[in-house]
Image (cartoon, rainbow, N blue to C red):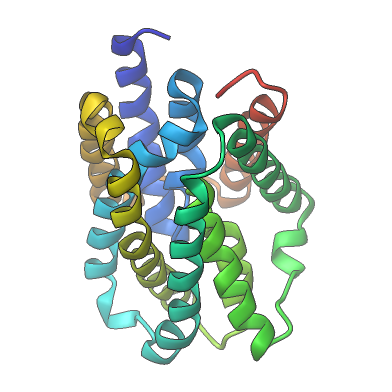
Length: 246
């Protein structure tokens, strides 16, 4: 895929991903990382998507700040930050193909559980299990830039309404970004500078999607939209596992 075509694809998918994340609290890493991995491999893609992910997550956290639940943020979020740091350190030592398989399997599981309804029935047992799930979701965030599905499944254990769930999940995602991005820049900052057009286009796109995507996406049938997104994520995950991307 040539650079001009990649930038167009990143712009379109970035706006969609920003809008999806504005509704669900996650989705930017799930949609953008596999796309960028087609051109540069998963290891580099995780680095490039991290900065746009941070920008959109910070904006969303500010917009929803009144609904963030501090207690959940301090417990689950702290565990997620620790996991994110550990995952980022591990990311620096693993090859791109390994990361492609890990991300592909994670995306396939997310897609299958969403299409089959498992994601709606799954609950984390509580207490220490919920904190462990926070560390696990943060670890995936640092390792492959994808943590939203696991984080949301764990947060369903807490007594949060939909707005509180999205706001708190977003705030926790921001904490994980703050933990992992310094490690990424220290170990792969040169890659970010080398591919700066992709980073800039993705950043602008996800911010636009965050601001303008929510009212547009809410007009779509929720169930059909969810199934379409899960199906797309599943196809991207399958491509990564089979080595067709990244």
